[in-house]
Image 1 (tube, rainbow, N blue to C red):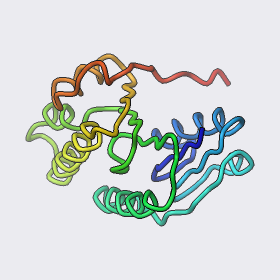
Image 2 (image 1 turned 120 degrees about the horizontal axis):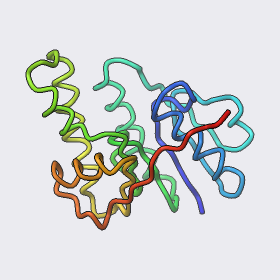
Image 3 (image 1 turned 90 degrees about the vertical axis):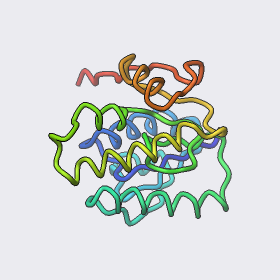
Image 4 (image 1 turned 90 degrees about the horizontal axis):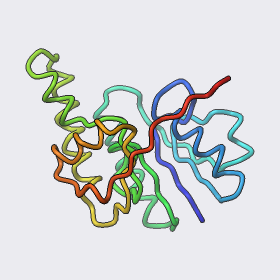
Length: 172
């Protein structure tokens, strides 16, 4: 099974990156894994193929635009059994992990959030809805039942397409 991940930073010091680090460590032992990212945690280099993408950290819109453009271009030339993305990081994932629901966060923040935060939530909501609603998205992984309910409510996603897999804890 060939697996590709698109993530801004594949390092254990951030949420999406930590998630991909753990998956890549496990899958990389038995499957060809390629990580497209702006940074890779050094211990993964022996387990995965790494393809550098110049992903800006800020602004959030720049990060999203870079990942979406690169993923769209790279997806034309490579095939994989699984393209795993986090939230709305790329428009091509057939497995999407939802760590949160931007539409629910936007609603909860309301007008109290700063303008740039409201803009990020709005863009994130549109991108998430697109990524999760695509026919080619086989499965959505929600990290909690709350996130699952929010995705169902905010985006109208069929509950049969969502599986809840809570984040684990590294005992070390």
